[in-house]
Length: 126
Image (cartoon, rainbow, N blue to C red; front, side, top):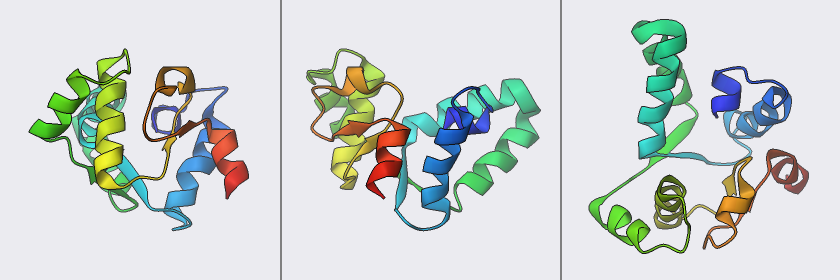
């Protein structure tokens, strides 16, 4: 998501195609609740508060939020994933019923209960 919103090269093209799968309603798109605030923070630095809110409003027309609850955080604390943020993402995805996670950081999700795929691998599955 950040590759698309922040126009990060050389990752933009494939990431945009993955995001567009949700925009086109080919898949149900989810974003973990904690990721929304991270996205907002990073966008604010680039485009200001109003621009960030506009971008988030548009994003929320095509994606739903996977809740980050007390239980989610507690489960993430005992997750085999070393990175806590990744553990929260994985637990939120699992609790929301997500079939997979799309990320460029697949090695950090090796022990995830929800399989993680690179954008290009995800696109090949469609």
